[in-house]
Image (cartoon, rainbow, N blue to C red; front, side, top):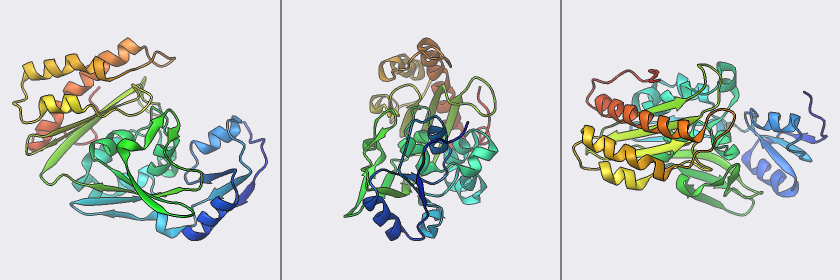
Amino acid sequence: MTITCEFDYLKPKTLNEAKKLLAKHKKSQLLAGGTDLIGNLKEDALAPSNLIDLKGIKELKKLTVTKNALTIGALVTFSDLIASKAIKKYFPIIYEAALTVASKAIRNRATVVGNICSAVPCMDSSGFLMVYDTKLKIVGSKARRTIPIAKWFKGPRKTTLKKDEIVTSIEIKAPATKHAGCYIKLGRYRGEDLAQATVTVLATSKNKFRVSFGSVGPTPIRPLNLEKMLDGKLVDDKLIEEVMKKIPTVISPITDIRATKEYRTHMCQVMFKRALLASIARLKGIGPSYGTNFL
């Protein structure tokens, strides 16, 4: 399949130049990894007058990892996350989630920022971004702003990003206490496949929990009511069953070619239990290694 629409290709060398181009050319699309964009161009879902390639802007390639914080630039790929020993050490859920993204070839191109800007319900990065209370750094032609991930998604393929804005980085702060977690992705087969459902759990040494569901609603879901049921409690079989019964009330899966809503709902319950128990075990230093297949 070829790209049939005509557009001008622009490649700025600085962020300031990119901002000016975006403000000047109203019908433009930004290109980072291009794994979603190129597909949309081939399918005639988009017909921009200009394509602004960001890959020449060095400051957007920044990946900074410390024990307490993480900065992911707009050009950082999923392969970059997997290759980072510091990511695996301090933010292992991110490492685990990145391993499940499509194929190696796609991971080499696809960026985390591009993934959330596409905002498809089955995106792979939303789970860890939601449980880490991520903030997005954004620049526009007139101002800069920071927005929490909880306010980013507005619907399928819809975000709060304005036409003259560029997401420059993702900023993550680790919990103040020791933490561990688990990411589980349900697909039809192993390998390059879109998620039928995802579950992410983060547990801290203060007996606090964060939970996120993906691909089972128009936007990622952070069910605060389920987290409150877990926080400060002894997590035993009885409590887990009580929380599992509530899961159908917080997700809204659909039936499509990949799975029925009933199957997605049931598997979210199964995956939640496995992710929760794995997170607690990992916190104690006795759980399965990150990257383990739980399905």
